[in-house]
Length: 587
Image (cartoon, rainbow, N blue to C red):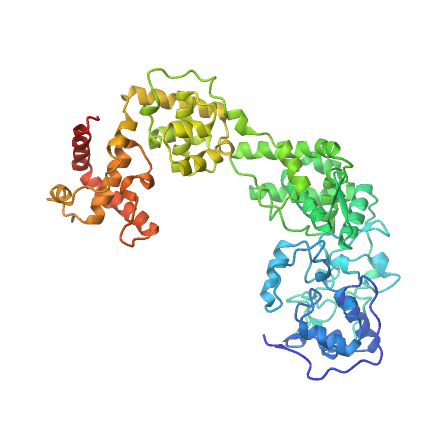
């Protein structure tokens, strides 16, 4: 749709002034009603940048942020201070509650980033009917998804109109944030949504008087305290977590992390501890989470209703309101241990690892999380296999041994990485090395490989006892099959970059396969991996320049060789390799 603006903007002689903390849409609706015009007509008079759709007018970034064009039109038409105009936009929370770094006023599609990542309602608002009995001002904070309870009347905010079934101030059922441009003034005391339930060709407006709607009382002190603190953070006040002073943004980040934790780890016991008004809705959430077979829908998304927000406040309050670090540790530790147990049981990484944790929270979580790397470190309890030494160990455990003995004890680990880790574990078992890094160095692994493999090994092993038992059985299998001096083989083949083309040509006769320079190098790579038990990427044949061939091209060529050529040339290549090793005195 084309973005346009009013051709002529004139200063209004009089209009209703906005109230402190009022939402932009609330002021436009009140001021338009006072002038006897539709809110869409009034938006044009103000000179707002527009998107038009039939008889519904859509201001660009309405109530979120002012574009330069809208700011100029408002300045000319109202003369209001810029601080007042900016204070009615959700962007005023950009330094406290919301991260609007992904918002680009040049394109409205950037609103989706804000909508999906921040706890905010871009196209609707919650409300307190009791507040609206004494006035028609809708506060801006009602548009936050963390808006749960009215601190004045101690009641849950309402999310949608029971008469039309549409969220308050959404406007049109099929078009977000539509302002009526061709109808008369809209009474701000009414719902005013254009209902999809109407049977008219042009649906009428919902005439529900909002102030007449019943409310649900909620006097829970935890929920009230959390709502009050959220409003303090919204004002940009310095906050406190665990007795430490933090910024409003950091306080909100702590809330979001704890919210994700309780939403993913809560069970029936937590439902029973909630205030009665919140239990049914939260139980439904848990049932939906279980039916999905995972931790829950979009853990970082904001609470969908005021009841959800109140439940989050009630469950996170003991942690968020802790007066010092020790009290916080006492409240947080059971949740951390529950999360760790879930990770170990399901062999997954931390599902909350992508959620931002401010320094005080990050330090606390790290302190309370069991360090399983220390649990799996010692291998001394495992009886050491005699008659086998480091020279008899490959850099990659054989695929069959890994699949049979080790893989079930690793989670979210690629097979090649797991085989590397298993080889390091074998070296630790055989050599008695104190650390993983020392074991990798003793095995002769290159430094970058050793660091990559050992850096995260502790977080990948779910069952330490089963893992070490598998390592012990793998060492026995190596011995039973006949010990191979892999170290000597690696040394003997350290300069093998290609199989001589004339030798490969002889092998290819009667097979229909053409001998090429590239295949001679892949043949050398295969011999390396097959005889040394090493990673093909670390073979001499894979090193160095490949005449402009990219790494991706190398990988593809290697895959094709293994699929199409190696099965046919396996026997002659193995015989050729045996002769080469024998010439070096290696078997």
